[in-house]
Length: 372
Image 1 (cartoon, rainbow, N blue to C red):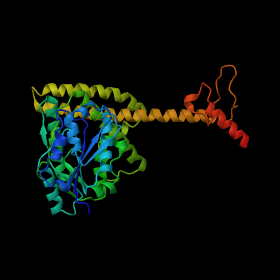
Image 2 (cartoon, one colour):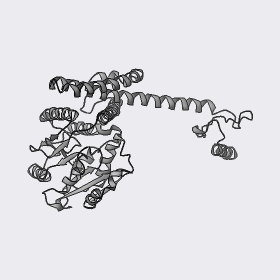
Image 3 (cartoon, one colour):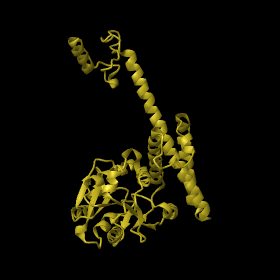
């Protein structure tokens, strides 16, 4: 068996105000260096990677998964984790974020827990919060609330507070790209359904840097809603929930394309307004501020969900439209109109070429006629 025990996967993405601390902390563990590996994951054309400090840190990593993903697209995040998963070789997989700073004894705590609990499949731990801005403090309050809820049944997250055996991760199907960041929740639902053994590490493993601008927050939450839509669609298509449940009935009603198209912009605007109110209300009353924050979170998540539903409905209409044109044109004459130079649509035609000569489609028709 390989001596590498723990794989720390660090996407150099969404670093916020943490600088290179996420990668630095992964490389500075007190755990024996030959019993853990660091897998860094990079995006394309990231100007920050030209920093000499970044190059020096990457040279110390056990592996660097270089991707062609857009560093400006928040939807790229789950693909970065998947790239790291493909490169890792450890028995335990520990996913981090570009803005989570590991504590020096992080790997030691993980190793001790799994040594004492050899049957454990997933372990989670609390996280500390670093928040300087009003929005960062709201995020910290919500993180703390989630940690309290996790005491009942556990949790699985990609944010440096959960560890999973690689064989368990593989058996559960890994992270699903279509679900975006919501894939962590989908994976946890599958783990519960298959009765995975979930344990708790009582000491914090990392500090989460919460500060970000409102625009980033809105994009991240909408992406989560879009991932939720893909996940719920798959559950409903199978006619079962695999141990999960659709949390609020509103998500069922928002699956109707007409409603979704109407809701998406309204909810997006409402979420932004409520977020601004939450940030401003902190000066007056924290409880009111947090309630506004939760409402902003719900509206923005549902906005992303509704947008994804409306976009999928639009794609389906486009496919049906293309298919109906293909069926109507299947028996039409193959020659182009001499009047307008327009070409009759044929199943072998490339649809983007409609309205102008299509040499490939014409050649395929000639071959077909010769064979006949």
